[in-house]
Structure formats: structure tokens, C-alpha cells
Image (cartoon, rainbow, N blue to C red; front, side, top):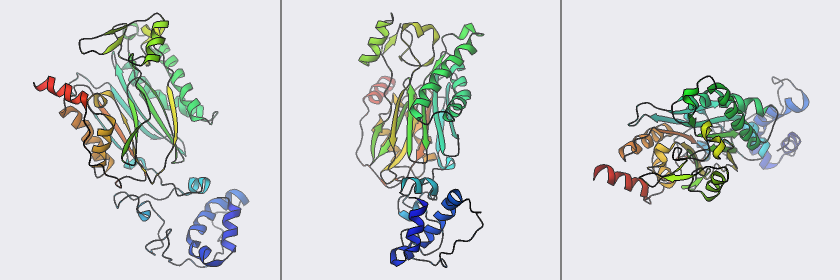
Length: 376
């Protein structure tokens, strides 16, 4: 909604304009200084504010409207409306606070935790979420954890398309890791998955991924996969490996590996397999959030994915009171079900958090298989 439209609505009088004066005054304070270079302290003569039992002041308290005021948060999480993007996109967009994001990472039965994760306010309007699952040592995951955000942050100053930004960042990061590991030839086989999500203006969600870590959006209580595992089981990935001179073998559990070593066909690092078709170029996806229907974003490593399917993860999280409890419960549940790998998860709440429940029970074939083998 433009500043002109807001001014026109304020001056037009009428019942509707009078009812929404509180919202208009707040919006104009934000917009007018940008348009007319007015000082923020300059009063706007829209009349005296008074409590009006409307959607923007439902309890006549005069307090700023929050997600909870709209009934979206089911009285569980109280966050304000993000005014600037709400005006830009013409609809209420909740503010996503990092303090409400849930994160957990458990070592499992491994000797060390090679998983890494990051959550940060990368720029004024972009939030950054990432999980990395290292293999062949923690060096690659550590490098991703330390430098991925920096590569992305440098690129967004020059490129507006976040899918392009992620693609360039992954490839540049891979080159940077190659230079770094040049001085450590004993870790030439080190590599890492990388799944990164960028949230701009609280509404534009862009995900990039290599490997088998995943991103999933819960919409209307259903799991919507935002990534696809890069494994030799995928026909397109397998063909690229073969065309590059590589081969695929299966281990005793029936899992395919590139050249008998790597269970994924894309990764940051693994430079000894780059000539056989293993690449660092991510697959990307852009999606617009609908906060009325979208409950949360979950990023997970394969310590969780191998033992719990996406819908099962979605159902368990939807039963939790807050994202921090959800992250802890999922990581612990994966270990209880028999996962021996590091288990890492990030849960980012959106507008429909706590609103939707799914009582259907999901069946996980992988969990059943591992559990029966572990405790038979």
C-alpha cells in the first residue's frame, strides 16, 4: 500500500477510515519520512487515537497488533506485525524473531559431532538458517559454518535474486575450501552437505541444498519438501556420475555410493571425487509464505531424516508447545528410534504455529527397519 493511498484513506473520512486510524498513523510514521523527508518527531494530525474494537485493535488496548491478536498464534507466541513489509506487500506479515527459533544438535553414537548449524539476522531484512553435515572429518563442515554466511552477505549487495545468490555462494565456498585444504592434503576426502534457507521480508523463502540434509515447510499440517536428496538413487544424478567416469556400488545395507565411498552426489568438498561427477552446485527453490497456513520451517540432517519421514517430523513438531521444545524432542526421538548418527534440527516458527494439529499416525519404513535390526 503506497503512502499516497494511506493519506487518501485517512482524509476520506467515513466509518472505515475512522476505525483504522490507529493503524494508519503507525504506517504513516514509517512511510512518510521516506517519501517527504519529514522528521520522525513531526506529529501527524489524524485526530486523537482512541480504542476501537477492530482487527487492528481487537481488545481496545491501544497496543500494537500482534500475531496473537489475529488469533494466528493460538495464544502461544506473541510477536508484532512487521510493518514495513506489510505495507510493501499489502497484507499483514508477522515478524519472525530469532529468539523464538528452536535448535538442537546431538552427537548420537558417533565419536564426534560433525554437524554444524547457524541462525542469524544476516541483513536488515534477511534471516539466515543453515545446517551442515560433515563427513571425512569436521573440516569441511567447519569451513561452511564459518564462511557460508559471509559469501552470501557479500553477494546480496550486488544481486537481488536470492536463488542466484545461493548458487554463486555455494560454488565460491567450494573453491574457497579447496584453497584452504590445499595445505592439508590428509583431509582431501573431507566434505559436507549444506542446506541453507534465506527468509526475506518475512515472506520470501529461498532454499539451496547439496547432499542429503533437508528443508521442509509445514503447510496446513502437511509436510512440503523444499529439497530433494542428492543420492545415486536419483536417475539424473546417477547419469551425471557415470558420464563423468564415476561408478555406483551398493553396500551391505543396499545403500548406493559414488565410487564405493560417498553416499551423495553433490557436496561441498570431496575433491577426490569432483572429477567423477560430484558437484557443489545446489538445487534451489523459492516459495512465498502464507502465514495463515504455514506453521514452520524445519532444516534437518540425515541423522533425523534416515529414521523419521517428513510427515512424521511435521506431526511431532505440531504437538509441541514451542519451537525449542520441538527441536529437542525431534533430535532425542531420532536417537530413541535407533539413529546412530549426529542429529541436528532447526525449527523456524511462522504464523500458523500452534494452529494446526494432525492426529494421523505416519509410518516410517526406515525407522521400522533400523529399529527391528537394532533390537531384534
